[in-house]
Every structure is written in C-alpha cells, then in structure tokens.
Image 1 (tube, rainbow, N blue to C red):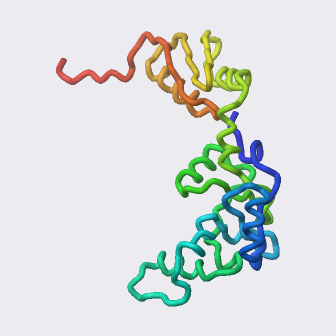
Image 2 (cartoon, helix red, strand yellow):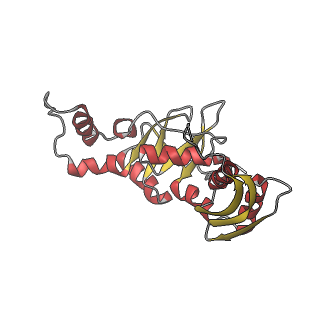
Image 3 (cartoon, rainbow, N blue to C red):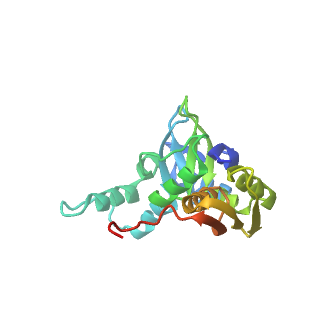
Length: 218
C-alpha cells in the first residue's frame, strides 16, 4: 500500500492572511506549537510561508532601510524582511505545497530537499489550503502496526512461493527461495519502498545467478 498525504495530514490549516501583523504571526505559531505558518490570500490560496527564522531577523539584522549595492540578493531580502511588519513583507515566496494525493514518500523528499518541516496541503481543483502536513506526521509511518507492515510485505511477494517474514522495530527480515538472483534483489527493493519499513535484511536464496557476467573467450 502506498500511503498518500491525505492518510496522515493534519486537517487544521495553520495559516494567516497577508496583512497579519508580526504579533499575530507569533501568536499563531505559539497557539499551534509550530515553527512556521502559511500565508494565504483572500481566496485562501497559499502565497508564501513565514518561519521562525524569518521572524528572528527582526533581532539579528540591525540594518533596516540602508541596503548596499555590494550585498547579495539574499542579504538584501533579509534586510527587507527585518524591516517588515506584515506577513506579506516577512514571508518567503512562493509557498511550497502538496495535494492530498501526493505520496508520503514524495512529500518527505520535498521536505528534505527544501529543508522545511511542514507543507500546506491544497485542494487540487481550487488551490485552497485544506490542511497541513508536518514532519512529525511523516515520521509516524515508522510506527505503523506490525500487522499492517506484514500485510504490505505479503502483498509484494510472489505467489505461491513460501516466505518467512520477521519484523522488529521496522526492520524486515525475509527468508525463502527464488529461482534467479535478480528476483531476490528486486524483492528486497520492493519491500524497502513500503512506507514504514526502516531496513530490509534479505536471507532469500536463489539457484541461478543471472547477474553474473562471464568474460568473452572463457
């Protein structure tokens, strides 16, 4: 079974309007115990994100209005954010979003690549924000019940072959027999892709090594 964002997302859309004040943003972060909030327009469409790092610039960046031509674009943007007082001025834009049908694996990759801990979830038709996916939601797949993991592993095994499966803290140990080495390797990779599997230890044996390359002339 391939888990999708809709299976684990939070149904609360943690967001503020573009004209929300600095104090309102801080209040929203404290109320929901999050490190960032989505900024939405009047039609509830995400347009950016304000993070704790954006807010901290108010303390760490002492430059407010004077910007040097020799500074990088990032430095100039940080100065502008430090002087900002509304969500529209403080946010990082555009907002990075996912939809309910995005796979959890793809969402996790996006979080890792962009170094972000939460993603607004939007309706694929309207673009409205309908929830929030937190990093902790994604990590919960590694606490799935053993029975669920067993069922998912069984679903990818060839039939009617007999295999023994043992799962301990997300680590799957599988033993059995297949005809070809390539089948054993493919089976390991299929199990590794199951949400909630931490690692796979294969004890599957095979009769024929179809990956062995024999040099010509021998």
